Length: 199
Image 1: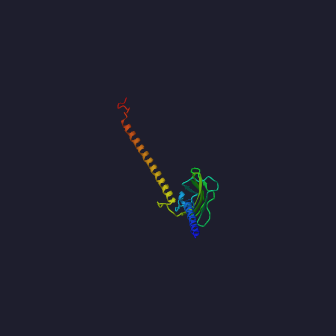
Image 2: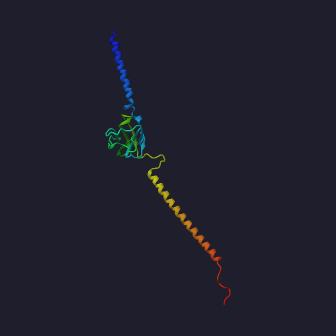
Image 3: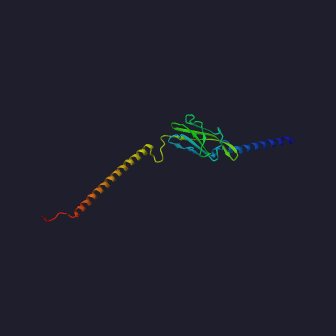
C-alpha cells in the first residue's frame, strides 16, 4: 500500500531537481544574455544620422579566442543581412567584438549575436539581440545640419580674413603718418648751413 506514495515522492523530487537545474542554467541561456553586453556602438535604441561602417560590441568578460565561435547578424528593415559575416575580436581589447557592416538608407537595424565568453578556465555561450535606427533627417541637438555648420564656418573664415586685412591696412597707415610726422619735425629742427651774409 505504501509503494505508490513513495513512487510519487520520488517523481516529485526528480521534477523539483530538474526545475532547480533549469533555473541555475538561466543566467547562461538566452534570457540572461543581455546583462553581459556592457556597451554597444551604436547604442541599443539609438537613432543615428547615417549607418556606421562597423559595430562595436563590448562584453564584461573576454571573448574566447576560438575561430568561428562568435556569430553576429545585422538585418535591415527589409530583412536583408548587411554584415559581412566576419566579426572579429579587437586588437586593443579581448572584450570587444568588431562587426563590419554596409547598410544603406533609413530604417531599423536588428543586431543578433551569439558569442562565447571566458570566465576563468570555463567557456559559456551568450545570445541576445538589440535594435537601433538610421534616419538621415535626424538633426543634432543644436538643430543645425552639417551643411549649415560648414556654411557658418566658411562665413566666419571670410569675416576673420577681412578683419585681419583691415587691421594690417590701419597699422600701415599709422606707421606711414608717424614717419611723415617725425620726418617733418626733424627737418624743422635741423640747422641751416646757409649764411645770411653774402660775399
